Image (cartoon, rainbow, N blue to C red; front, side, top):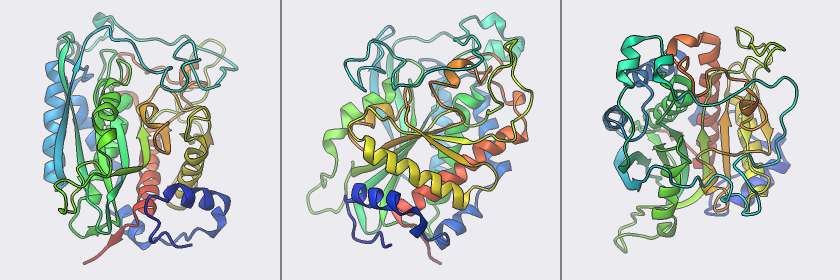
Length: 396
């Protein structure tokens, strides 16, 4: 099956592809070449570097320093048009999780996912004194203040269809007075690694890719909503006219990454979690069945499952219909959107499957190589999935 000359008919392509997954070609030489440029150790190193800024809570010096570091890394990778989106945030703003799916939902836990089995108490640690590491406690001491916020993105411009774009995102802010190593250093490092390999001058894509590191996810997806509010209406507009430049290409897919490392299974009867990654760990790819783009998003999710089959080295992927409370939510009624993560957001994360979620223990040292390898397999999966969407080629 050819993807050539599809244009913004990606939706039709995805639906047809989803109906005939066995027809997909597994070779993909462009993707295979890029897979050789990523490694588990480099992925771990990028997460480790992010943890130098503590939990990166929005509205703090440590958050701004992390933004500066990310910007510097993206520029060093050669990623073109490294830009910042600026917006204002007021503490206590209403969260927009639920209304974005369907105004009829009464609260933020939406999407149809129902918790089952052993359920452990989850929440957010708001007590800095629960962090036993004095150095880390001091690093995270500055409280958040309202005001101007920024987030960073850079763009790989497509050779043939620069006016069409795949969005690849993760949020760089965290909470809980730890290091936000998993939530969401693991997703941020994944997106940064993708930006690095796709920005190489010998890598060519038919369509554009934008790599976005959201801010203010933990306050209610405010950074992602700010992006949609400011840029959705600019899609596909050539500026200046006749320049073949598109500051906001037409969105054809949105792929979010949020918490990539921990799949140890459900809580034990006493509320504890198994110490090591379970043998049947998998990558969860979620779409939202209540969204306006549900059919197209489901087809996109199955594309990611098949990319995992072809390109991930260890862990399989599963597809679920309950994407919620993540930075793809603001996009899901506008463009096919999926979330890639360690566990189902509602049924599993909400039921305590990750004891480090928003806790002081979300530090690099809490995770072992099997955990990091789950995130690395998600990196391989998205590298392949994006490569197929944008038709990547590596040319000498």
